[in-house]
Length: 207
Image (tube, rainbow, N blue to C red; front, side, top):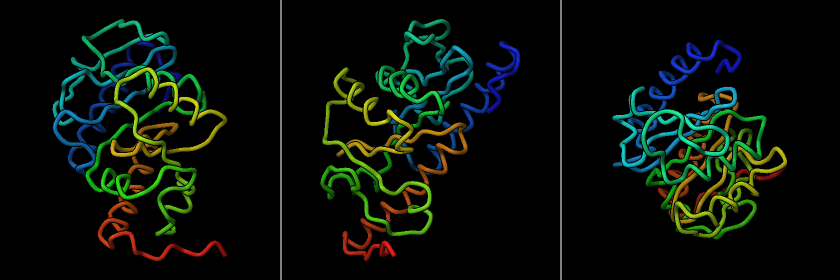
């Protein structure tokens, strides 16, 4: 994702990519209905998914543009998780994209696991390489300031690249859409294995 292009052309180009990845998240069943949301930093502006829109239907004209304080510059009402996205991007200047997904296997795994600094066991080499250890925070009410502040603190200091929310889903970050999406798929695959084996799959040993 090139954040150094000219302002209007850059925004339009990244809006197109933003919409493509919204559709991809839906087609991969990482979100359903009107669940899930995404943010992308473009210079000093941030793109957000609109409130009440299914990601399968997000197009350029409904993408919301805000400034760093969350004031709407273009578009309608942003996702109710806007504060969470803004907090993460403020805490992590090294990333430009935040994905929040509600995949069924991910939520099922979070409902089976206990919160902590390394919740989902290391079941695949890809998961170990890209994500492990994957922390999870206890359930908090979606869209609240308390959740936004807690999540932002978890992402401070350059780690982690993903965070599980108990009974709620997953947040991933990346320098671009591909990176955030790839992490989401790695976690989803591991969550599927965990759930399909009823939590009895043997983890890869540390050595």
